[in-house]
Amino acid sequence: MFFARFSAVLLLASFSVAVPSGSLDDQWVYLNKTVDGRLHTAVPFARPCFQQSTLSGSYDEAACLSVETNYLNATVRSGTFATYMATQSETCQKTDAQCTLDWQNITDPAASAAPRTCSQGSISPYYASFANFVSSLLLIFSNQIDVKCAKDVQAAFAFSEKTGVHVVIKNTGHDYKGRSSSPNSLGLWSHNLKSMSYIRQFRPQGCPSHTTFSAATIGAGVQHTELFEFAEAQGVTLPGGACSSVGVTGGYLQGGGHSWLSNIYGLAVDRVLEFEVVTPTGQHLFANACQNSDLFFALRGGGGGTFGFVLSATTKALPKVSYTSVEVTYASDNTTLPKFVSFLISNAVQWSLDGWSGQIRPGSKLVLTAVNTTEAEATAYMSSLRDLATEINGTFSVATTPSYLAFHKTFVIPDALNELDGIPQTIGSRLISADTFADHPDELLSSLLNIVSASAVSFIFANAPYSVSQDASLGPASVTPAWRTSVWHVIAGAGWTFDTPPEVQSLLYAGITASIDPLRAITPSSGAYQNEADLHEPDFSTAYWGENYARLEQIKRKYDPNHLLDCWNCVGWKGANDTLFSCYL
Ligand SMILES: Cc1cc2nc3c(=O)[nH]c(=O)nc-3n(C[C@H](O)[C@H](O)[C@H](O)COP(=O)(O)OP(=O)(O)OC[C@H]3O[C@@H](n4cnc5c(N)ncnc54)[C@H](O)[C@@H]3O)c2cc1C
Ligand SMILES: *[C@@H]1O[C@H](CO)[C@@H](O)[C@H](O)[C@H]1NC(C)=O
Ligand SMILES: *[C@@H]1O[C@H](CO)[C@@H](O)[C@H](O)[C@H]1NC(C)=O
Ligand SMILES: *[C@@H]1O[C@H](CO)[C@@H](O)[C@H](O)[C@H]1NC(C)=O
Ligand SMILES: *[C@@H]1O[C@H](CO)[C@@H](O)[C@H](O)[C@H]1NC(C)=O
Ligand SMILES: *[C@@H]1O[C@H](CO)[C@@H](O)[C@H](O)[C@H]1NC(C)=O
Ligand SMILES: *[C@@H]1O[C@H](CO)[C@@H](O)[C@H](O)[C@H]1NC(C)=O
Ligand SMILES: *[C@@H]1O[C@H](CO)[C@@H](O)[C@H](O)[C@H]1NC(C)=O
Image 1 (tube, rainbow, N blue to C red):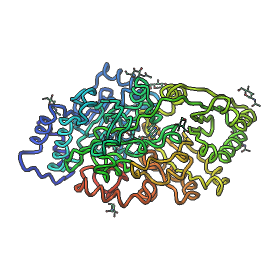
Image 2 (image 1 turned 90 degrees about the vertical axis):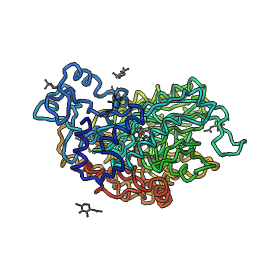
Image 3 (image 1 turned 90 degrees about the horizontal axis):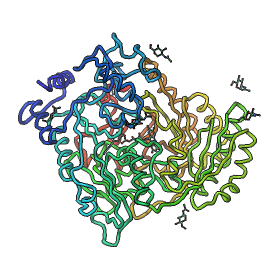
Image 4 (image 1 turned 180 degrees about the horizontal axis):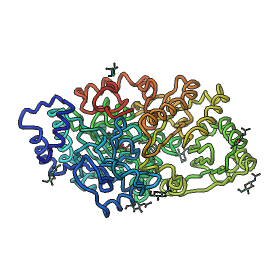
């Protein structure tokens, strides 16, 4: 009875449900028992604000008030299963079935009053929440992690295999391409896997005894603020992404993982030493350079939600250092903007070679950071940038921050656009290879100016790991090799209102694709960063993985032969016609 609604959905979607023992309801009940009652019903976040709904529950003024207060709060949203950063992932875009509020005016009744109706959209109706059963302290000594948790994940894959119900892994729900939600699926939620441990002499399993690293083992649910605070407390550096609430070892790491300082520290995949993972074939494995190295390669850039459920990842812990950052702010107009961007194009490659890394908002500011440089040296090195700042009536300043956490708090967090949570939005991007700056400076300038004027948001991440050498002992990573020959990762973004109709949303997607096309034209052998890319990236497998794609497909076939884990434009993608993607535009 309890699962009646879900069963009905399944029948309508005519899944071929093969249940060897007991009905589908029995299977759900069995799964819930296996995971010790941690199978939950996922109710859309804004359900209490709607009078009318296809779902159970009812309007509740007090509960609605709390939803309104927290609707755009990244901490609350990432700690709630049924919410996604880009809210179209909660909705069924194709049918416009949704349960979202007017993000521009949260109390606007036009979003939630009848005839508008709250629907399940793309949110998994049921989800299993995984948790650690062993304390972090024990993990340090055992290196044999949570067997119970692994068993729970194995049970979820077995359930999927038996019933034909798709599984989808959700961590923070920050994915731009909806890869952590899917209608009628079973959600596997990693959020509560919060263990962290620092290990002075970590030896990856199966590696020779002299192979040890200063490292940290990070549970699948840990988010970046938690990581930076932990590193600070341990007196080490664990670099990570710009958005405090993005997960550390989920889609971020498995897709590549850049930071403002990735031209100093490399990508997240360049520092990871080992993954603990449960594969859809039911194996509980430790993958590193010495054992299961094919899976290790795949998880270092092949993409999240594709090869297995990562329970934790162990990553290098680096010495704590201080950072010297140069900041320019200015008010752009149609004289200063081209001047500023041309200057960037002329200097980008040299800055990158000399180890500077950071983020640029072409229309308003730049932050570039280096290590092993005094403020006086930085000021001297950047003297022409300071002259330009004066010329465009901007500000120029240099500051030292004593740790990664301090750097993050001083420069990254105040950059509020890094947290646009609860808003329907999309982006497109391109990795700009070093040769482009000399070969096509004029086209690069005009493309960037178009992007700045046409997009709601635009970023230049001047942080491709161009000056960073990789640790050869780890073997190759599977991200596109274009990351290694590029200097910039350029992003254009668009958003829309709660009531934008699907056909207008389609036009916005097409507009993003078109705005990146001129960059694609001048960087034909480059690629794009899969985690921050166009939903309709042309030739996505080449763009995201280049020459690594063929090997990734083989590895996918080995560890997920029955496609229990599939996602949009992921390795092994069978096309948009899969019922998993019935809500995509
Ligand atoms: C505001 C904002 C800022 C960002 N800043 C950066 C940045 O600085 N650098 C950067 O590189 N990227 C950045 N990103 C992009 C980010 O890398 C992606 O959004 C990424 O998909 C987030 O991963 P997640 O696990 O937190 O999110 P989710 O949406 O929960 O998951 C993303 C994908 O990973 C899979 N996945 C999650 N957990 C696991 C697991 N345990 N095992 C296997 N698969 C899993 C999911 O199935 C899904 O396919 C940013 C995104 C946002 C929204
Ligand atoms: C799973 O079991 C627990 C404990 O028995 C129960 O509280 C919960 O409602 C069940 N979940 C579902 C989705 O039925
Ligand atoms: C978001 O919610 C958290 C947790 O309740 C709270 O600590 C924080 O202050 C909130 N942030 C904002 C900007 O309101
Ligand atoms: C928000 O919605 C309320 C209720 O409809 C309305 O009174 C108010 O003017 C709106 N505010 C803005 C800024 O649009
Ligand atoms: C500069 O921008 C303004 C509006 O911001 C516009 O009216 C003007 O035509 C632009 N000038 C040139 C030369 O493009
Ligand atoms: C900074 O200096 C330290 C100590 O000399 C060195 O180990 C490190 O590699 C340097 N970092 C960079 C990015 O040059
Ligand atoms: C320079 O900026 C200041 C304030 O930041 C402003 O008052 C002034 O008009 C600007 N001058 C020019 C020439 O734009
Ligand atoms: C997907 O479906 C569309 C419309 O139903 C059809 O035209 C197309 O051929 C299908 N593509 C594949 C690869 O099956």
